[in-house]
Amino acid sequence: MSGKLFHRTLFVVLTTASLYGCQKPTDSSLVAELNDGYWQAHITLPGGNVETGFEISRNGDSHRASLINGQERVQVDEVRFTDGELTLRFPGFNTTIKAQLLNDELRGDLTLVKQFGSTQSMPFVATLGSEATPESGISPNRDLSGRWAVTFHGAESDDSTYIGEFAQRGARLFGTFLHPNGDYRFLAGHVRGNNFHLSTFDGAHVYIFSGQVNEEGKIVNADFWSGTSWHQNWSGIRNERAALPDAFQRTFLNPSYDRFEFEFPNEDGVMISIDDEKYRDKVVIITVAGTWCPNCNDEARFLAPFHKKYRDDGLEIVALLFEHFDDADLAAQQARNFKQKFDIEYDTLIAGISDKTEAAKTLPTLSAVLAFPTTIFIDRAGQVRQIHTGFVGPGTGEHYVSLQNSFTELTTTLLAESSEEATTDMTPADSETAENN
Image 1: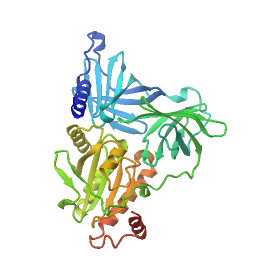
Image 2: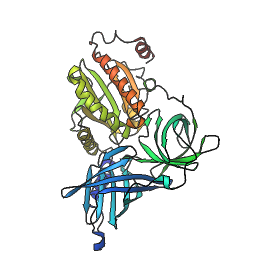
Image 3: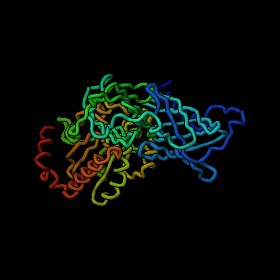
Image 4: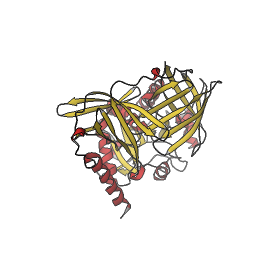
């Protein structure tokens, strides 16, 4: 069986399973009513439980659901309840929850579809009722509020410094981690004694961060679990001055190229190139992204209305999508779902598989592909003016606001230039970057 046929078959099997499930038990006690309200949920990983929840409500003869992910609410795209079995699907991420209802408790599994169609499955349990109150357990002895310089150790880690930003209210703990390629989005958890626990499930990623704060005020004995297989140790110290590398100074145009070039098919198989008439004399933002990537979803949520706002001023945007599937038809369907989800009116092109090394080979005009997304700003003269590595989303608060402002300022500056004056209007910093490239 060819690789493409295998991956297509696997995708069909997974999709069919998520829609219809296994044969249902005939025990009539399982055929119960799914009550509206809040469902406290736990997803079990090797490193503990992800604590999350769902709001379920009826919509006529069907149901609606929203995922409560820390301070974020995520609408569940597909909700089915048949013969006592609940199916929740996030088709943009190829994520499915299937659980049987018995006595106001749902038990089943969460399944993630990863690169090349591989899957991870983890137990899922949800109970109808109010959100758990961590204050009812051991009182917190530590307050983690503030900024931390964090180092992840272990497999494939370069021991680079990340930033943890946390806010604690009583025993409740909220926050996120910022890293050079983006952020870990909305995290929520608790502090009990000297121990803390943070977790997230955003429809795509399942994370647990846990550890202790010792007498010296340092984070020690800390673990990070992503899904069922990825594990790293980490540590942290308070540092209000902790900073990340400048995201505009990490990726460059390859010295052997004087412009960024691409030519890929869109979701309908039509080849699109930077040399097409629609991009001539336009400011073009190119995002190297993937529909499976939460940070890319955060960027698309910003770029879709941004494009509509500035399109008449001469802005075009192109998304080069690197997908989990190397089958063109499956990747194209992901692109269509992505466009519908965010009401995208710019081109989305199928560029390759979701591997940064392979993406770099596909885009030799870049010095490297360090992150999804990577965002390239091109002026009206066709010159690369800036390249931004990664994207920090709404879970980072003021950092997200700052990034939106910098994207807006850069874009409006480029739009104000004519094609003739674009190159001559480059700032000294821009000129130096161009020379180095």
